Length: 240
Ligand SMILES: [Zn+2]
Image 1 (cartoon, rainbow, N blue to C red):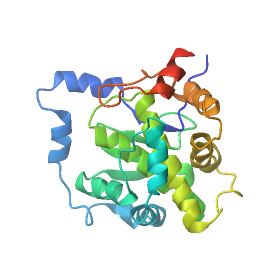
Image 2 (image 1 turned 90 degrees about the horizontal axis):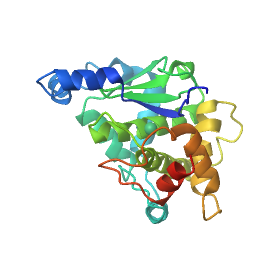
Image 3 (image 1 turned 90 degrees about the vertical axis):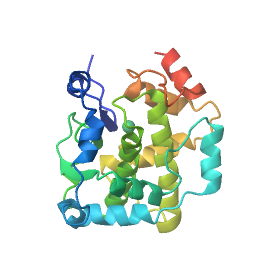
């Protein structure tokens, strides 16, 4: 069996669990204690692609009807605007860098222990505005993982963040028109554009979405303490 590479990944590594169990001090608190001056000591805010992504994310408003649509699907977005997510990034000193992800084919990941969002370095120095918007959506997704303050993920957790990606993508389309359609970049074609299509598929049973979730996240539990599984998550898990 080939290893599963989620599009947006979450490092809940054995290492961080090991450390969690063997340190008397809570690692989250240790990490928070290393507070830094966000503007002075964050070289990545000077990276033009990340700076543009964060500016675009900060101005992003979700359509209330899209949030309602997700809710009816049993999807709970952790942030109700891009600004909420950017405020959280600043408050929690989350670093954002370009680097090699832990698994091939991953566009972005959040490392809980290091409090770092990594964007695949293939997009470093991009001058493509559509890619910068996709990076903004990837940052949004990974910030959802950061908000949980735990080292776990589940199908429902991923659904919540991917659903939020879908409505963010629709908001960018509304603002900028169809700027993603000509792209050959996987972060767009196999990432943000794809999930916008799958979540807003006219098929009421959302079979294409369920199949994709099974393929990419099927090894995770259906839900967890913070994200009780809804119908889609339970169906995806049952069909494995
Ligand atoms: Zn994720």
